[in-house]
Image (cartoon, rainbow, N blue to C red; front, top):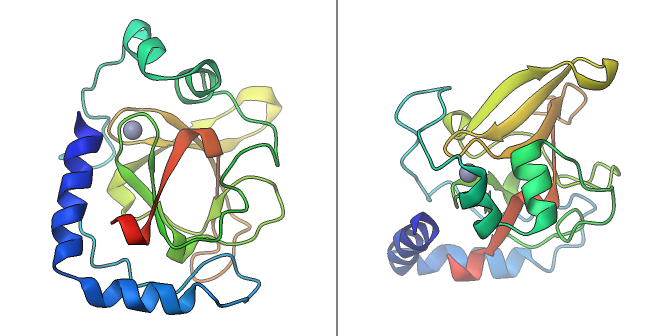
Length: 187
Ligand SMILES: [Zn+2]
């Protein structure tokens, strides 16, 4: 399974980088209002999807995803649903680590770019790598929004809005159920 190979890769990387874990642990006591911790996660380099902006062929059958995901995950990831705000398990997560796609394990966001938005959904000002997400215009419900999905499996993540903090000014508003969290100590 791809997520397992991803973890194996991370374990290899972690074995080369004990120093960073010390930095992360020291920073985790920081009570700064900003939800992120200053762990240097930029060392974790991943292979981006081969073609920028194009969904990599992955199993897209409903049967596959119904077996992989629970009902709510299926609704959000495969049917572009939205979890109710303040109900997910990651909107208030302040730990240092990596947020991966619940569908396929691709690392999408880092705690380094997570911020407190007050919306009740995990919010980031940028993805780990621009090639790891796909952006499409979403005109549903009479609104023009930019949808964010995983560039590898096409799983719906959320939307991006132009009212985020510096340095990008963007707010990636992501569903908790679309993500898995891997704490830095497990990287
Ligand atoms: Zn994915």
